[in-house]
Amino acid sequence: ETIEVLEKWHGIKNINVDTTTKEGLIRAGKLGLAESGLADVVFTSYPSEAVDIFNPINKGAFFSLFRHPNERTVSLFYFIQIASWQGKTYTPHLKNMKLEDWLRKDRVKCNQGNAMTRLLIGKYKKACVITEEEFQMAKDVLRRKFTIGLMSKMEESVERFDRRFGWYDNEKRQQCFYSHIKVGDNKNPHKEVKEGSEAWKLLTEMNSVDIRLYEYAVKLFELQKDQNRIRGITQQA
Image (cartoon, rainbow, N blue to C red; front, side):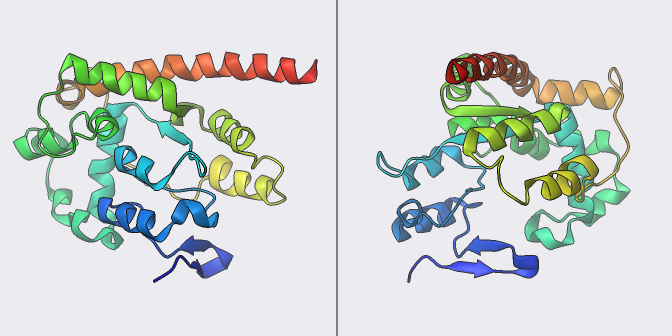
């Protein structure tokens, strides 16, 4: 078994490993994904496991788009109602349930609450409690390892990623930027939750740690902007 490039519809190319699962990451490491040099980007929700793919010779770098945790959870609620292609996560019966009732379920609180913090520290299942030490660990991971993007500043974030990773001069960039970022081709319009509403209060309670981490990510976003500006001035001098 070897690493191979698979070309799918519209010329999109993928590698024959699934890095969206922990098992897939282990397989990718055994097959030498990093050493192959075939992948430009690895998508995963398991950063703690993803680091094992890379080594001092074949290094990787994290980047991520961050969204306000309450908005993220609401979007997930409406997305899994329609995402028939998502397998086990497809939950069409939620169309008949109120968001507030879904948020009150203990299973949802533990599995979806503070998801961003839990993923960063590798605390995946039924993590109803995040300690202050674990929160500080997540902050440290963000500060040291990640190039930060914000969904609220999508265009600026994507441009930062493109410049950071050398994609800015790609001949197809402008076309892709317009169709996927400016116009957007993967949207799922849904009702917004007003701040101060019962649903918002429930969301804030279940995402209390993630909200603190998001606020820290926003600060890092601005800090990295200043660092990039200084780096650009230095390079021009």
